[in-house]
Amino acid sequence: MRKREGFISNSSSSSFIIAVKNPKKLKVTIEVDLKPYVSRDPIDTEEKLFKYYTEDLYIEEDELKDNDSYNRCLEAIKQGKIVLNISCSSDGDPFEQAIYNTGLGDMVKNNNIELISQEGE
Image (cartoon, rainbow, N blue to C red; front, side, top):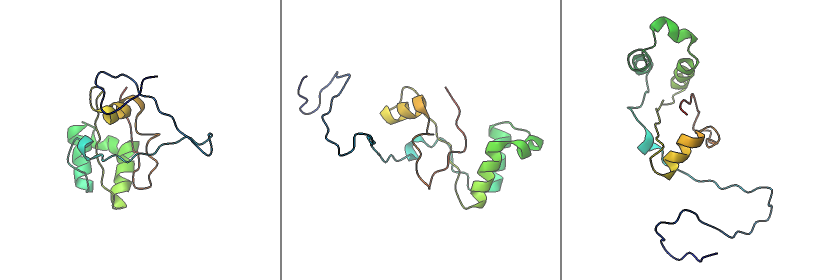
């Protein structure tokens, strides 16, 4: 195994030696600022939510009452939360690639964030 000192370019892998008290609990928690991944203005009112779903997503007004993600967003706004649209791509930075490949579902373990819907590959 080579010894890594400083920045190594053209490296496709990394190795680590770790010591743990309980090998059954091997978790790493990171905190990431999601602001760079927000793709549109925050939705903080029922009017903005209605406009987003009817004008941007082209969902008919009479279909909204049966739309689960719309209803969950509406409930979140009523609770004082702000709805954000997060976008990512397979050719973005490493965190963006992780979101693209695995989604946010398993990453969101925060009472402040509620995953309302997830689409994509």
